[in-house]
Image (cartoon, rainbow, N blue to C red; front, top):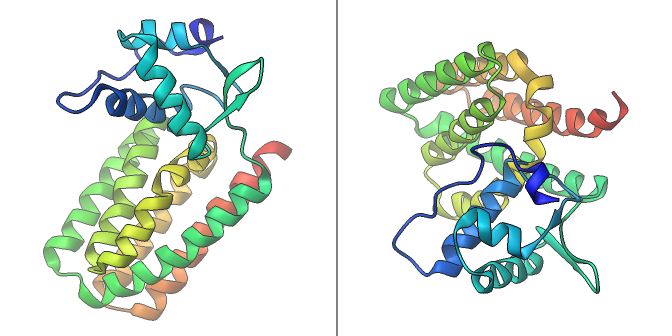
Length: 225
């Protein structure tokens, strides 16, 4: 149940302005993405409404939207549950992510300037601090920001739009393996920054492909550890 499964302080504040149903949707999606609401967890409308300080109607609308997008399963006579992704679902998405991110790394190596490289180094330093502090949520957030910066430096709006469509699910899959990946993930980020700084498109592509493949393998290995 939600009341026993939601970590203290995990409920995000509803941002204003904007339609209430959209703000409730964003709040619930963030809780799912960060795994404050775990895959398979029962979602009770009244409890969610109480936590978010809203009526049940916008919660019901948000759950229906989340169901349409594959984040929530609505089961007849049982209610709403956080979707439990299959290994195949995760594999397909993380494979697509590798294709997008490898091309972004190549373009970043071709286009990045000194300011962009400095921004990558700053993000990497923050991520390393999060790992040192065993701050999994912080590490996941900084990982997402690092990869988003690579995508920004690539300078391809269509590629960025495609990546944005999978970004939330990448975070969802990365969270349970963030501690396992730990320092190694940020060592790989440092190597990638060096390739981008050297304008070595081929090496940047190779490193990003290997980096994202490591994450994919770690995700599949989590259930066997």
